[in-house]
Structure formats: C-alpha cells, structure tokens
Length: 97
Image (cartoon, rainbow, N blue to C red):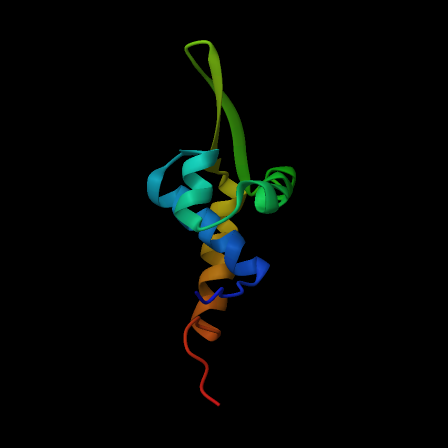
C-alpha cells in the first residue's frame, strides 16, 4: 500500500471543503472523510479553530456530548480568495518531470 504525503495546506483545504460540502460534521466523520488520523491530525483542527477558520461546538446526544465542526465565515473567505486560486495554480495530481 502506498502512503501519499499531503501538504498541510491541502489537509486544511480538504477539511474546509468537506465542512462546506456537508455544513457540519462530527469529529469522527470529518477525520474519516478527509482520510486523517484522529490522534495525529487533531492539532490541525485545534489550530484552525484557534485561527477562526472553523468553528467547534458541542451538541448533547443523550448522556454524551458530540464535538462538531463547521466552516467559519473567515474560513469561507480564505477558501474562496486564497485556497481555490492556489489549487488552480498548483493543482494536485501526477507530477510531470
């Protein structure tokens, strides 16, 4: 099995794209849809919350509390103004040597 390395900018973009696609997701689904490890990549989520790119909120579910995320307005603006043009300039895919 080949493990592909993703730059942190692409991980952040993937997170914001999935959240904008689904509206809001719990932490487990978000990590699963983005192909990330909960333990290894949680710090990226925390950093994005701290910078105001995504919002973290808790929702009661019976006796448990579920952690959910959604894209903040600042995150939408950055996605639209920076990350989409970056992807257009430097698309992911097979490199041509």
